[in-house]
Length: 228
Ligand SMILES: C[S@@+](CC[C@H](N)C(=O)[O-])C[C@H]1O[C@@H](n2cnc3c(N)ncnc32)[C@H](O)[C@@H]1O
Image (tube, rainbow, N blue to C red; front, side, top):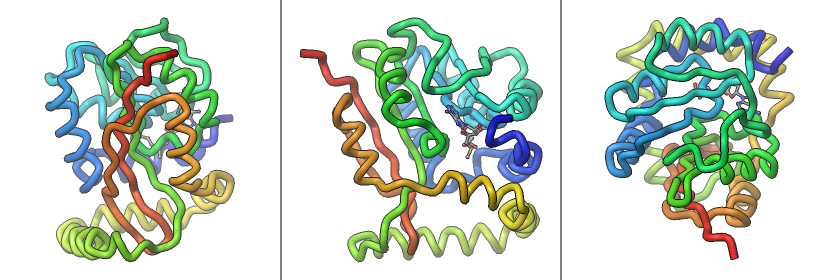
């Protein structure tokens, strides 16, 4: 059984619309508009809301997801415009140099980073980019205080306008299956991730998208480093 199988239905019910990713989605959308990839892989696509939201902007869209339960939800959500495959980042069913862009939205923390990064590098074209958005551990950094305040205010406003969403979110995060998942996949450190990424890619851009007391959501744009 894949780690997301037991929570897939509840997860998909909460995160049905990518608009709930208040900070992550506008950043990703801006990058896709700027870089104009012709081919894109949504890695660890979950219920497929990112691939769905990119409809009409990227000609060739692929999505990869290891959880069979998530895959069947994504299949229903996506229809025919996206090639959806079952599989994991550490061993991808794609040829070398297949994509202009690979996006991992909140799935990287579940991967074996060294093997996944090798594979992402392999499936990207020469000038391809890897966009990573994830939650990382870390103690509160005073430098991010303005970002923390902005994130807190935006979430409070969203909360007031979307009480139904927060009710569902609370139900998910309080469930035993979710707690077990989080316990078994704790957030990992941002500096470890950066160090590992730098071994293969150059970090073209880095952004703290949401700062919290126990860590942050970071966005990284990683370009392929030319092999020597
Ligand atoms: C928090 S969900 C994020 C899903 C979706 N990207 C989103 O933003 O809602 C994490 C996803 O990563 C997937 N995942 C877990 N291990 C993975 C791996 N080794 N390779 C690719 N995806 C993985 C899970 O099955 C799950 O669907």
